[in-house]
Length: 303
Image (cartoon, rainbow, N blue to C red):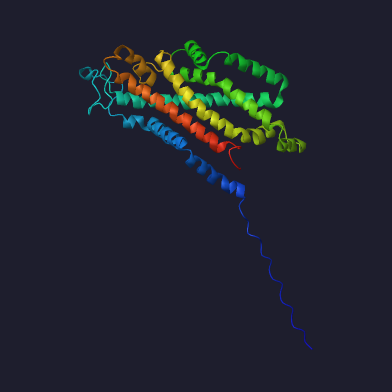
């Protein structure tokens, strides 16, 4: 009697890996929140337009922004000069476009400078506490005793009038606020369970700070950056208006407002258009910052 051969064992089917629902849902949920926030969309579009104009302003400018044309001095807005001309006949549209470049340069560079200095100080003060926290906090409080623009004007006066020195002055003036935000986030994050687990596993201070605390504080710092850019734009305009930033004949929105003072009654377009651009630029980045905060806020929805 022959036995029927036993059937071959079926091959085990490996389970198909599925993406983590939390990670896959994050971009979609963020986009949904952004679409619901119409003002944030407007701010993002305007901010992108300003950045694009700053990059290609030299190509968009129809005239040389520094070349005078005395025959067209104080010309009203028209087909030849869409935004009119100033007292020296220079095209206002060309000067506004190039002035946006200076504003964006200062806005981005000043915030980067502030973050490079402030974030390490905030991390050290919040993580180590005691003497380090006391020293950093007292220095921060001393700088915060002066209003932002007052401190920027004072530093720019000491450093000397130029666009580079104005950027440094504005960046230094923004350091205290970023230090306090970074310190607060570090104090909150260092008491969470995953940091305690990393310490129990023997992780060093550098690993804890730069692999566990700083990445989880990034969302808050990004929001702080979007808020700092409009402050830097206003700061550059104020310093240039006072003669401590961009120096004539180089165009700047603040320089244009300063030169428009004697002609405000006869040629109001000299002040209206640069002022309007400053308002739109600061409004765009503020709206963008609000939208970014809503998207990155961990308490704004399920993560």
